[in-house]
Length: 75
Image 1 (cartoon, rainbow, N blue to C red):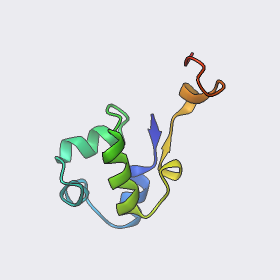
Image 2: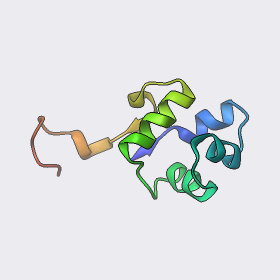
Image 3: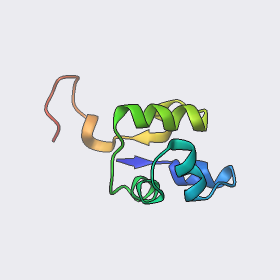
Image 4: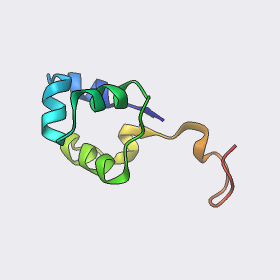
């Protein structure tokens, strides 16, 4: 899933370690989130959105995962 975590973190002048401390996760988790190797759990996504003061939709882009009608299987 594409996201804007790195961009929003850099705009605030935070290191990955600083963001990790604020989110109570490891720096490796922040790195994996930023590079798209890891999709956050819903509770973590909400914590990220609250911390960055952005709606979840402004941070995370599910891409093609949600292209079909609601309830339709992903392609």
